[in-house]
Length: 477
Image (cartoon, rainbow, N blue to C red):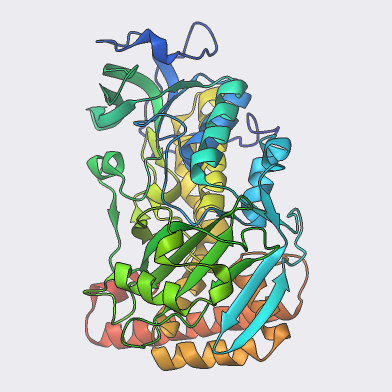
């Protein structure tokens, strides 16, 4: 993304009333060391404040700093720190990390070549498909290690990082976000009011900062609930990541979601289960019992048992499919999990955190270099252009498989056909080829057509009942 500084050129729309803040003066960037301790005031003003140093925030800070902008990245914890995640990096995520210059750092992590899928007595090994600009491999690395690598990369590019510093609330004046009130959350943290020309909200799925700015989740959209833990296993070095599509609860009922075992290559495996909110089993679901049932159904050779557990599982809810908004304002952008960017097809969030952080950096760089805050209005258009239709189809798909009978038919049909599962992997991993109409792309177009047909049918029904959704003409999306 070498052209991040000057890719966009635009004139202020006639309706734009956003005001330009004074240009930043002074040194470009520097790293504040934790030994500086707490401060009661922050006299310096930054071009961009990034709230949260996870995948989206660190990516945004990296690309902004690389483009020459003064950016401050604040993180309420200190690296390395634990983070609940499946730990699997798909080719989309690897592409972003390699673009940030982290190829050699990733090389020491466990590399795998594709997905081994299990369901209803069948197993298929599926290599990652070829796709323009994407590698055909992924990595498994804990978020504890990964997030520290990317944050350090942002610092090396010129960003400042303040650890043990929480952005407790936004500073707003005349309806514009002007910075944040910081609170030290540990040794070496910083407190006080910090001013910035722009703010990026990247504090994760339970974004308190975003909520303070008015973001909320569209409750008609699906969300996920997942739980994961670590176990010792003799199969930690497997060349595949494994998923089970026939996960059952303690009563033996198939649930819409999947279970996984991802080897870390160091004697440990990441084991987890995920459930979709579109299921009738969502209300009152006990993910701990679901995890216990999944561990019991795993083949004995994995060695997953209470004796090999390395600690209690942890989990949380996952906002999906562009479900959180608004994602932009006159002086701020919302990225990654804080904007509900998780892929409903497969529950992946890391790649989309890196990608949306990079998009936000592109838009902010244009706003800063052109002196035109209205550039931020393009962020939502870019998100819709890149992800809107794909996520619309994904949301419709997860609603369909929430019917246990539909789920069973889809899985059993797919597991009997390598070709069908290869198509599914390409679609669900978002590895479609934009300039080539192969079988997977044709299948995806059929899904698109079915989604639009269903949307139109629902729209007509809702229109006859006077539904406000019909007036918006937007039933599914």
